Length: 518
Ligand code: BES
Ligand code: MN
Ligand code: ZN
Image 1 (cartoon, rainbow, N blue to C red):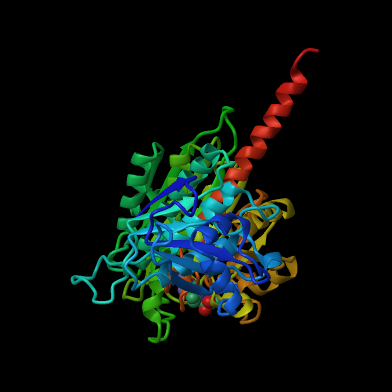
Image 2: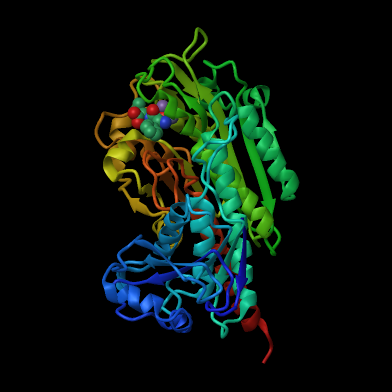
């Protein structure tokens, strides 16, 4: 499907279906569709008058124009209450609508972007939201299907976003192109996550990282077992001991900052390509889902791809510790003590708390960059799903300002975060009798003790931990996330980095201004 912009009048566009948004309170046809309504001999106003459509969220009602206008069908798309309409509502209604097109044969789709003209919503953002809704909502994973499915979804060949003639098209076009790049990366993350453990191995992730490095012109280094031994990554290597798949430590380094020597933002993603629990084996029910335990790593690789393609003026490092967690005769055992890269020792009481172990080494490695900020992302605890459900990211950290920065980017992207406290009293649970730390606390506050454990490995750098155990996998489809891998984190990270880049540019500009002689 090609997506393009146009300023044609709705009553003149030749399409198989034209989508006209409608809010609940709209009694009359909204201004952008009035000329269309007149040309179509009052089709929309009569539809509204019947009361058959109410504008409630996600309502889709298709009527046929009988040749009165060049487009064959018009869909009234319910956008809910105007006061509640946000950017994410636009993604949601467009995403769900995209899937509702099937089984109609729509080859040329036209959309009047919902929300145009509402305060605080720019045409750039709304057009990008339409792209996101469509691209992310229509995603399907077909790599392992050998036959065309009988009810396989048909996707339009072209989608035209119709914008008012008064708008300048160039900035909207730029926003759409940027959004396409971000969506491609989100879908890459989804592919990596959806592929089973036998395909998405640490080696496969490393190959993807090398490819990202090549295409996006950044350096990519992949450490193998011997390299990690030399460095002393005993925590990561401990987890990897049970598996025949070689572990990899992936390092992507992007240098885009205008100023030399600028401290990087380091992104760290958990890359457990399959989590069986190890000797502390998980129950059989739903174990297959644990292929998504590398969703954090996938988000980091995908984000790095975007950073490179958008050429963000920042320094960004992506780190992905990648291994399987399996039981075997060589596997690490409950009771084992591991010596981590930081020098601190860890008593393993549960081999299923492996994510924090590989992250401990990755976070210690992140500190070597003397980073401006460290953001880690991980499907770390089942407890986070219990606490926050499957739609929210749990956020913990050491730095209020950084958390606020992440929260803003999260609200904008629709990948929302909610904070949990990281108070020192939770450290008590992690004290070990024979080593520096245990890798698990009691059953209570599992997400917090996991975060507390990670905090021991970040020194005093500004750091935020994101637990995506819930939103990384959709048990049921969501408006713009089909059932399965969501690719959560990519859009949040990209938004965070873009905001950092522009606030730095603004700060730089004021500095040069003040330097100017008067
Ligand atoms: N990968 C899991 C966490 C997880 C569980 C993610 C369910 C997504 C869905 C993690 O490695 C794990 O097993 N955590 C344990 C920690 C416990 C042993 C302290 C958990 O959550 O049960
Ligand atoms: Mn586990
Ligand atoms: Zn895990």
